[in-house]
Each structure stands twice: as structure tokens, then as C-alpha cells.
Length: 191
Image 1 (cartoon, one colour):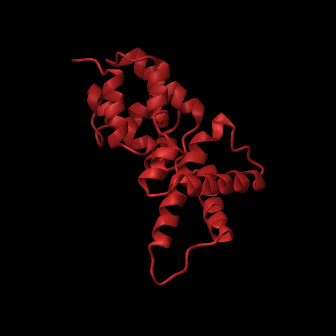
Image 2 (cartoon, rainbow, N blue to C red):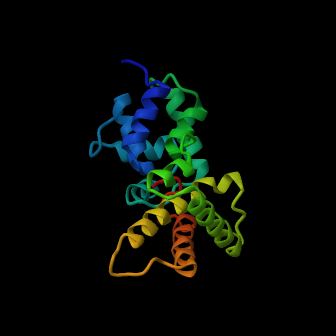
Image 3 (tube, rainbow, N blue to C red):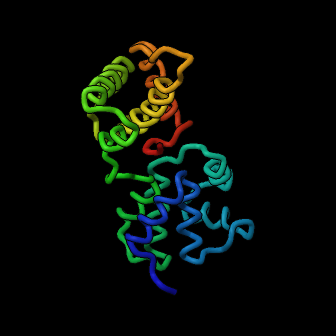
């Protein structure tokens, strides 16, 4: 069986957006027991969690960092992957170091001055929630909130029946997305 390479993980990451989708795509590639034929039990055993926890992940519940690391170490040790534990961990998390928020905002049609205004609002909103927007651990939350809110902003600006949204409205939307990421309702780093 051919080994899974880091470039294969990158390809899978582009196609699969939730943790559970990424995990199953990797397990499919590695030839692990099929879904519906004992895969949840296999994941629970490898991740050292209960089958109920795996069921929660399947339903979109947030996975703990320790569980991701345990699964990644097990996958590297037991399956045909030519990747480091760190690469598999990053893949399972859905890390997108290649994401350039400014480029994504530009693709949505926001000019540089509008981007600066927009990202300053986000930084202020996160600070108002007691979060440090420059904290590397919050980059995925920050980037998700920025891009999702920008999509909302562009759609609102293109709505001829409504006036352009003001700062307060944009802040509320940003606060909403930040909160959803923190609560685990939106997986940080997804757009």
C-alpha cells in the first residue's frame, strides 16, 4: 500500500473542512476499516476516547487538542503515512498556514483602506471580548471571523434595498462569529 505523503494531506485538506471529514478522508486513504463497519470503534481505540466522543465529533462537536495529538501519533505509528506527527496533527486541526487573510479580503473586492478599517474593527471587537487578537493561538479564530464577516459585509453592501452596514452592525456580526468559534460551533480556521 502506498504511503500517504504531506502533499496528499494538503490535497485532502482542501476537500474536507471539518475535523471528522479530514480524519475519515485520511483513514480512507490509509485503508482503515470502512465507516459503518467498525470505524468509530477503531477511532475510539486509537484516540483513547469513548465511542460517544467519536459520535460527538461526527455530529460536529469540538475535538480536544490532546485527542488530536493522540490520534496523530497513533496514525503515524500504525498506518502507512510518510508524514511526521506534527504534519498529521496540523492536517487534522485543519491548519491553514497558507491562508493570507488580506488576499482573501481582496478576492472579495475589499480595497486596502477598507481592509484596514475592517481588520481594525475586528481587533477592537476581540479586545472588547477580552481576547488578544495578535495571540498566535487565536489566529484561526481571527481569520475565520475576518473572512466570514467580510462575506457578510460584501453581501450587505450589494443589497440595493438596504444601506451599507455601519460599524456597530459589523462589530455585532464579528462578535457573533468570534463567539461561535470560541464555543466550537464553527471550527476555527474554516471559511
